[in-house]
Length: 262
Image (cartoon, rainbow, N blue to C red):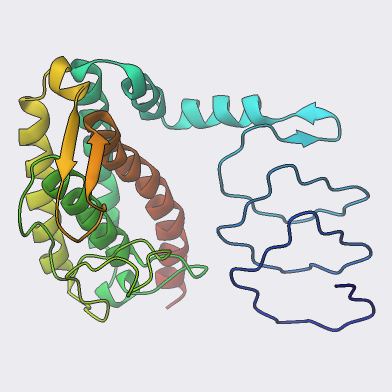
């Protein structure tokens, strides 16, 4: 397909394959790109002003300079628990426990900031991302899926108000959650506290042998039935908790500014 002199302003492209496409003299001002794969993308003669990039950078060259290592070093300086999480990726059970405690405890100040805001703001989305309460509900879902279902083998692991990742279509993988649910802060915090305690308990008894083994998931649900490395399951919880805290901090700053203007 060859599009030329076409006005596509305010269009929405979802699940469109543009692999190998060329963009020449294209106006992308104020474009919003979410969950996009830009592997191998090349920008020449690009004008970037007030550009905000949030994602996984595995080789990013800007004007001939590989900026990835600089970004990673600065993120490690700001968030030291990142180093612990990476070490846990191929470390023993003690390394996983150490990373989890650091990630878990880093949420304390974040929750205090959230409690200081009017609750309606905690239901608001920022830049089309999860609201603060949806973030916590997603972490509940993550623990239910990867710890309670996958590792512990619980038959009914899911909280009805959990939030699956957006890419999971409602009819793709059957999980007993109500996507229209809108629980309040105390309800969400109570559910989250139970999951944090479950992770604490599970990791307290985790051995190197168990960490290096596999777990069998049966029945319909998420993750799908099959064999999974225990490390993959456990680290999915740790990494999601770490990543979504950073997202929550970013969005809380916006919500706090909204509250100040009110």
